[in-house]
Structures are given as structure tokens and as C-alpha cells.
Length: 287
Image 1 (cartoon, helix red, strand yellow):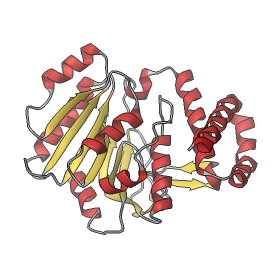
Image 2: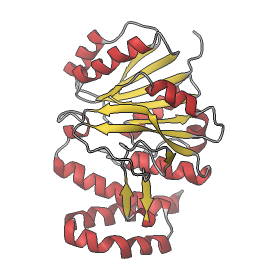
Image 3: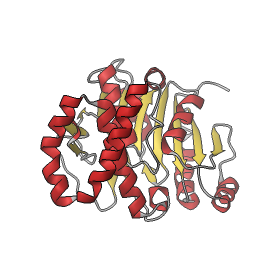
């Protein structure tokens, strides 16, 4: 089997009908572009059996099953199993366009590019042209996403439902941080983006032509968990991210900027942030 131009990695949890729509689209595009598709199903038995029955019968489509849902684990398995030099991650509930795959591939003609953040238009989202996309401000006190923008620019991090990397860069970084606790919401991509830019400054670009439409279904994925679970572990991972990536002085600057907002609007998040922060400093000492 020849080496594909790009490896597409998709994780799915509790949405077999949804992911088959994306797979049907990819089957059509496989006639135009050389790629492989690796699908990591993390669903319960009935959903997995449904997906097995509907899965494309093609050598370049592979279905794997993980019993325990863990975003960073399947992301890492994806690039480790990938045969292409470019690894594209898509969520199971996105729809691609005629240009999505080719725009990701074309971006890597520039040798300085190590990662590509694709454009994402969420269902019902207001579209802007602000040239401020995927930014980390004030040492993690604020994250600006705005991935619906049509302005090409450099970014600090990508949107996880539509992001690609050079496999060699992921290998050198050690991949995604599996010390982040599931359910993981956003901090897997924020963390990898920050580390990528630290190793190769200005190497992560936002490419509007690499567009997906993100349906954000009300079930499956992170919505498999309760709101309390998502809120707690998201804040825990926030604290861990701050602790491992920034110095004590930078953490102090963060507190000055973030604490008033946290006290006024999200006071329940303070304790899990602290717990994650302590966990991060402990992990950092041991590494």
C-alpha cells in the first residue's frame, strides 16, 4: 500500500450515526486525494456495533475501539499509527468542504509551518473578520478563539475539531499530554499549541480555506458527561495547564488579571483550578 499524503484521525463517542455522515463525505473525496482515515471509537457496545456495520469497506479506512474514553490517548494513538507526514484531526460532528483537505496539505509547502488551525464555523455562530484568532492572553488569563474568522494569521493554539500537524513535530513534542484529566475540553489543543510555538516560534498558522462546519450535536462526545463533571475537570485542567507551562512569576501575573473575573462570575471554579495547579507543580517537580 502506498504512503498517503495525509492521515485523518477521528475520535467518536456515542455518535455512530453522526460520524458515518462524515465518513460518507470522506469516501467521496478519497477519489481525489490520497489519504488514510483512522477512526477511534470510544462508545458503548451497541454504538460500536452500529458503526462496524456502516464503516466503509476500504483499505484506507481503519476502525479501532477504545474501551475507556480519553481524548489525549486517542490523539496520540492517531499520530503514532499514522503513515502520512501530515496528521489531520477532525471531530465526528463536522462537515468538510471541497477545499478542506487540500488547504491543510498545501499549507505544509512552507517548511516553517508545523501546524495548521483550520477555520471552524459552529452552527448558529456569528461570523467575524477580526484578525485575532486562537490567542492566549495575559499568561493564560484569557483565551480568544474566534475561529470563524476569514483572516489568515498566526495563532497560539488551534480548534481541536479541525487541526493538523507535521507528524515529526508531534513526535518531537511527545504528543498530547495524557496527564490532562478526561473529560477534556479545549486544553488538549491549547496545551499542544503553546508547546509547539515554544519549540518553533510562529509555526502554527490559521488557514481559513481549511474550513469545516461544526454541528455541535447536543449528545455524545463531551456531552456524554454531566455538566458538573465537565465544569470540574475543565477547571482542573485549566489549573494544570497554567502550572506546567508558566513560571511562578507568570502565575502571579495571571492571578492579578484573572482573579476579579473568577470571583465575580465563576467562583465555583476556583477550587478545581487550585487542585489542578497543585497537581501540575507536583508533576513538574517529578519530571
